[in-house]
Structure formats: structure tokens, C-alpha cells
Length: 300
Image (cartoon, rainbow, N blue to C red):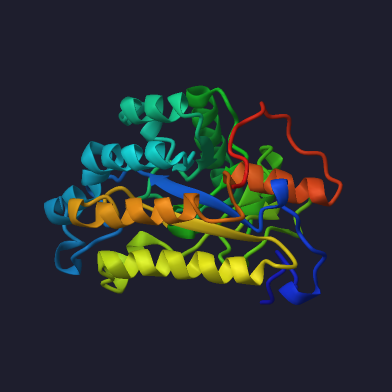
């Protein structure tokens, strides 16, 4: 079947995008904060044991994130003034309260990322999926005091019903479709796609492609430099998508820190969240943005 969620739109044929303060690149840090069920296979560093239950090797690798990795990562985010876009499994709200408190203290943007990263919507009926999404969104709203506006499916998965169901629940965008460097409208009224990256993503780079820390750093620099060059006439979005169990391993962390330093110190970069990027895009097209308190983070 043909894709009916969005139409083909070559980037060279679009009206220019202008980011706040004259910035050329809007950057956000997509921080995956996830919970995994101990008796289900999921993202793994070693496939030989991935089907076992329990699987201490792979589960422990993932569990390093909330126990250790994220706390090392927070030091770098604070040092470089980067406010995270938290891609949040709703089970995190009750299971890792210290992480939730850290995010609330830093005023993170909260994007719904499913119940946990072991559960996908594939195979659910519309009614089942709607009940599932209601639970996820309501749980995050209760924990953060703010209804999430964006969605990232666990493993970037959706059903054909997901975008319309999200719109019914008041969400405004999805990060699942990694096919652009600018936001765009979906065929579902009121729904947008905001860029995410499966390429500039620590799991893809370190686990799938065996990047070294220096290679990761060079890739981040190259990504930003190319986007900056391309954005002379119209703004672009750069998403750096990370998982604390991967990029915040001790031998990699210094390269993550250096990557943030390069981004935060780069000319014409707006340090934003995915919520703010959508608001700026919609405002540039005459769509009233959601009311939000004023925040720091002007381009530099």
C-alpha cells in the first residue's frame, strides 16, 4: 500500500524556515530514559543470549543507564547548558523517581515513549492501542504536571492508527519518521513530524557499527557543520539521540562531553527542545504556539 501519512516534499521546494534569534540550526538532545522488562528480549549488545529469560548480560548492560550512566550524563548537560528532551517510558515515573526529580528540577521537555521499551503496539486493535496510549500519556502528565505533546514509539514503532490516536489525546507530533531535517505536517489534522535521528544515535553508532569515541565525536561535528552549511537559506534541525547505557560508559563519556561543547559553542545554533522546535516552526507558518513560560536558551 502507499503511505498516506505524509506526501513527498523535496526540501528545495519549501518556504524558508527562520529559527529564533536568527539561528540557522535548531538542536535538541533526545535523551532516551527507558525501562525494560527482565523476561523479554530487547536492545542487546550480544545476540547470543538475547532470547534467554533472564538475560543478565544484556539486561544488566541496559540497566547501567538509570543506575549509573544518566548521572554522569547530567554533569555534561549541566556544564554546557543543554536542556534535554526526555524520551520517557511511562514506567520510569514510578520505578526511577530520582531521575524524574532530576528532570523536573532541570525543566526538561517530556516526550511520551511508550510504557516500557519491551512493549510495542504492533498487533493491538485500535481500542487496545487507545487504552494503552491513554495510560502512557496520563501517567506522564500526572508525574510531570505537564501533558506530553510529542511521541516516540519504543524502537520507533507505530501502527497505522497511532498518529490519529495521538491527535485524539491532544498530542501534536511524532518523532518516529526519521526522513527529514525540518518539521512537516502530517495528513492527520493537527499532527506534525519533528526530526529524530536513527543515524546520529549512539546505539546505532556504537552497537551496530562499532564506532570508537573519537569517531562518534567526529560524526557529531561533521553533522553540525554540514547542516550549518545547508541552512544558509532555510533552517535545519539537528537531533542527537542518546541512551545513558551506551554513550555514558566511562571510556566514551569524554567524547560525548566534547560533542556537547562543540555544539553549544557553535555559531548560529539554537539549543532547544523538540517542543520548542515545533512551536517555532508553527509560528513561522502563522499557527499559534502553545503557551509556555519564557525560557533561556537564545542562539549564540
